[in-house]
View 1: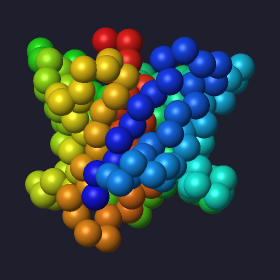
View 2 (view 1 turned 180 degrees about the vertical axis):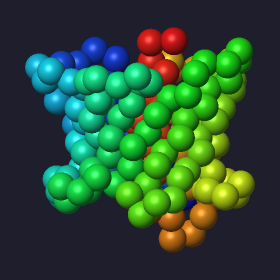
View 3 (view 1 turned 90 degrees about the horizontal axis):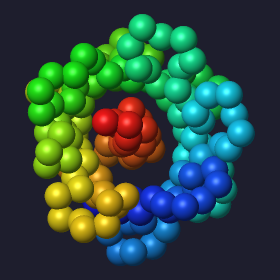
Length: 160
């Protein structure tokens, strides 16, 4: 399943839609303006919050947390910058871990579990700066979690 993320370049609160491969709205990323720390809510088309994404205020490494239903689902940490690569580790609440790594120049990132790719985040084919695709490759994958990871990658690499 492919999702297309088109961020609104000028907008208070950084709200934007994630569309499915048929061009239908699937999720809304609701950026909460005027908060002390960067916060996003991932909502389904009915307006139900399926994930909350927050940047940690005090952390040695750049860190974001993903919550679902008030429970921490994952902690995403940006590893030290290595030339032409970004690496992230997403520690899951169940003890597992997802690896996110990618090429800075091509803006390609893979989300992997145990060496197998779950999804690919790609800006390669888009001319518009704030547009990217998230290809979910594994059937039955936790789509809101993977899309939340894409939002984290975008937020944590946005200043680079």
